[in-house]
Every structure is written in structure tokens, then in C-alpha cells.
Image (cartoon, rainbow, N blue to C red):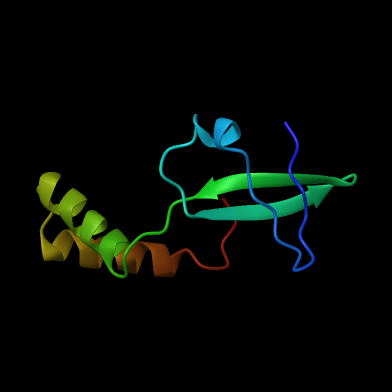
Length: 82
């Protein structure tokens, strides 16, 4: 498959090359030894990660006091080596 770079530095990716990638609008673009590497990126809606964490906490049956103790424990370990 070939893709041509336009005068505006745009490249259209061949449909066949994208068939195995789910609906993806964004790609992380890197280069390595003169080779372009495109990695699909999933964009999450603002706040969706926090909502997922809250769901997990609820599913685990954790109470606010448990979260407070975990935060205090993590903050108390700063600068300490294991």
C-alpha cells in the first residue's frame, strides 16, 4: 500500500490499513530510525476516569474512611525507600 504526502503535509491512510483498527480519530505519532509509528489513541470524556475510579471504589465496598486512610498512608510514605 502506498500513501502520498500532500503539499500541506497531510497523508491519507489507506482504508485497508485501517480495517483492523476500531473507530479511531486520533493517533500518537512517533518516529524511530526514520520510520513513522502511528498508535491509536482513545480520547476519554472529561471526568470519565474519575467516574470509573468512583465506580470501582463503590464496587469494592470501600467507605470514605477507607479512602482517607489509604491517602494518609500514601502521603506518609513519601520520600521513604522500600
